[in-house]
Length: 434
Image 1 (cartoon, helix red, strand yellow):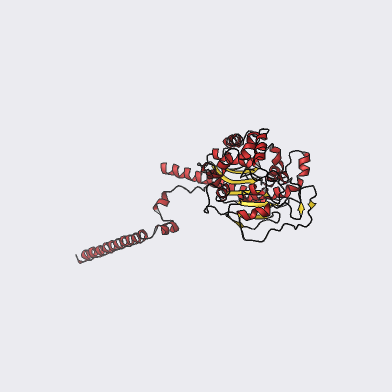
Image 2: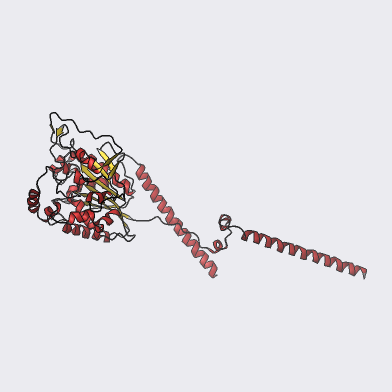
């Protein structure tokens, strides 16, 4: 009937309209999908729409790298670990509680410094290796050595393995170390036959220092010893100027050579220091020249004037002028020698600065006699910690402790974040299994 026909047409129209709606919706969805797929991956990250992100586990915050700073102190000829006593106390006093800094004050050469550089270096290397083996975390190594100890240390580091991530060389610092030996570098120039007599009297170590053997030359020119030294991030050499160091004049402590034109760039320094210079790494040099080969590694050289720190009055020298270091931007090695080795600039000071410069506190008399050298060691300890990335603390300054507290809070928050992420991951796993 007409009524039934109208009813069927109406039903068909409704169904047809529904089909059109469905087709329209499908077309719209496909267009949107194509639009999303055409976007760069960064847009997915920004919109949180990446399909991989939907199935990813909750992100676990990355823990900061953990390591231990190992600072090795090395004494010199006929020395003991007590020589570095004040410096060790200062480092430990300035180190914040939250910093993992361990000081090894070497004892391996106590009472045995006359059997040569090689034997002393081997003992030191074994002592350092044993100490590292007892530390569970990766180690960042810094060495601070005095006098002969600097040559021991230069030999020892060639025995260490820097090829792994477990041991990173950081700072190598020497104080009054005879890097060039003492042949032609004595307080008063003496003939070679006299050097040989003194060298033999001092046994194997004396023969090494007066270059009657080849070890000092090898340390200064052989890649076997120079390459490990070059791997340290920072090299520092302290030298006592104006002939105040009888044992180790400034020329050998700062490996200056009358035959070297290697450039030394003046850098800003503390008022406490006489002069600070730096050598640029990798400049053209004579590989057979110890002075130039060492300079080519890149060093900071700090010259100290300890005349006022020696507790014996100086003697005025008539008709002489006080030494004045000219204001220059650059020096060359050979031009620094007559300045730093000038012993008679207005006054003569008894040359006992060798132990004063490190505030040697081996016993009570030494502690008193060398006490005025403490400011040098205070500054050195502060600088070493800064170079290590450890903020030194002041006695009445709460800032560093506040930073420690912040670090501890951050560690707690990180731990909580890790636990939360692990719990969420576990819940997701259980849900997917269900």
